[in-house]
Amino acid sequence: MTDFDRPLNERGKKDAPAMADRLIARGIIIGSFVSSPAKRARKTAKIFSQAFKRSEEEIILIPELYLASSNVFESVLASIESDSDTIALFSHNPGITDFANTLTAARIDDIPTCGIFAVSVDTDDWKNFRAAKKEFLFFDYPKA
Figure 1 (cartoon, rainbow, N blue to C red):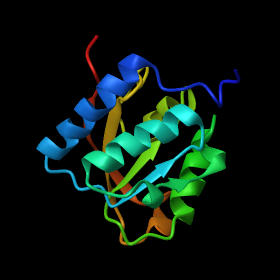
Figure 2 (figure 1 turned 90 degrees about the vertical axis):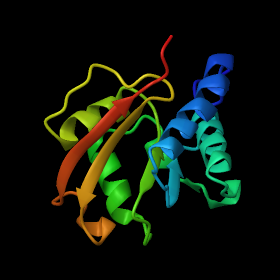
Figure 3 (figure 1 turned 180 degrees about the vertical axis):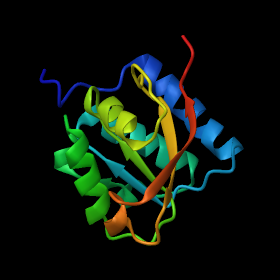
Figure 4 (figure 1 turned 120 degrees about the horizontal axis):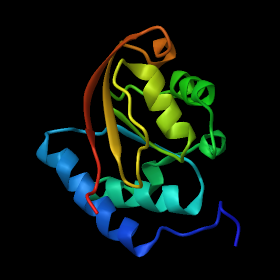
C-alpha cells in the first residue's frame, strides 16, 4: 500500500472526533475544510466536518497539500476562493509542522496526528495571507 492510500489508524479514528470536540468547546467555527486528498487526511477532514455539522462534499481537496512545503501551503491558502473567516487545513508532516513554524514566533517540534496549531490571520481576503499579520492562538494535540 502506498503512503497516499494508507488509512487513518484506530488511534486517529478515536482522536479526530475528540479534537474536533475540543475546537467546538473553544467556540471555533470552521468555515472551510481544506485537505490533502490522501486517504488519512481526507478521513480526518470528514470526521471534523461531521462534528461541525457540515457535509463531506464541502471539503476542498487540493492535491498539492500531499507532502507540501511551506511555500505550497501559503500558495494554497492565497488561492482559496472563500469568504470563510476560518479555514482548517488537513495535511502531512514534515510539511505541516514546517509551515506552522513559519507563521509566528511560536515553535514546535512536531504536530502529531490530529494535532491543532491555531493562528489568527489579520486579513479580509485570503489572497493576502502571505503578508498578513499572524498571531499564535494555541497548540493542542491528543495525549497518548
